[in-house]
Length: 179
Image (cartoon, rainbow, N blue to C red; front, side, top):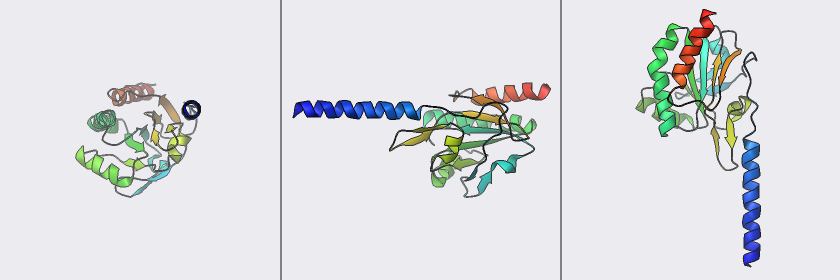
């Protein structure tokens, strides 16, 4: 009996490790490539798409979960840099697999003045190589994509820093615009 229990645990562990490693494979779009289109509801239920942001720079950031310490820090940092980004013609949009209601509560609690998109199935995060699928649980990876006014990826931030990502985006946007 114990022998079969050990064999079962080893098999389950192996399956979990395989699942995690296959979920870790990345296929995010790179700089110079067209940004994958999306059409998702924001925290107010309004459908938002990539084409809405044509003609502007877009900081599209994926984050794991509403109201977690790192995600709150990142969202608030983008909130605090929003005017500086807007002065350079850039918009900010956050995306996670949380639902519209969760996004609404998160945005209200932290006074987030930008759209938070509900990618409940994780399909958009997957197109951006920013989903971690552990079987029963899915969450977005903390990746950010700076998209130019023509809809092409200008810069990719993998495993972005919750604390510094908004400042990195702002600094790179200044560099990209200055030539």
